[in-house]
Length: 147
Image (cartoon, rainbow, N blue to C red; front, side, top):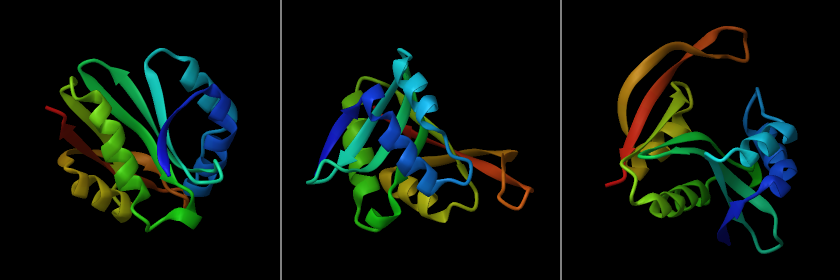
């Protein structure tokens, strides 16, 4: 398994993984558009048979990074892939100051991943996400100092 920088060519595979992870998923065209923009970069974790097992999308505007999304195909969860991918990708931005993100307050697995990686809670956005039931969920703001 290895970390690979993704291109618009990978948009379909990214959309397939994303829809398995999120109620409101981004589509193939969304990822194609993101990856054609100069500030977005994506990294994927690819298995032995060249299958995209996980990926992350970053908005890169120096001196900061925003982790826009990260997801792991459900058949590959609980194997340390997200942690390995995130830590490996963040090493590529050691000249940057900070990586930040928003995560749903009910996404305990993601919060645990970010905390394990070294992200710190910095705030809350009230009613930021729409829930599957039609209600809303708060977002926890987290940041990771890269220097």
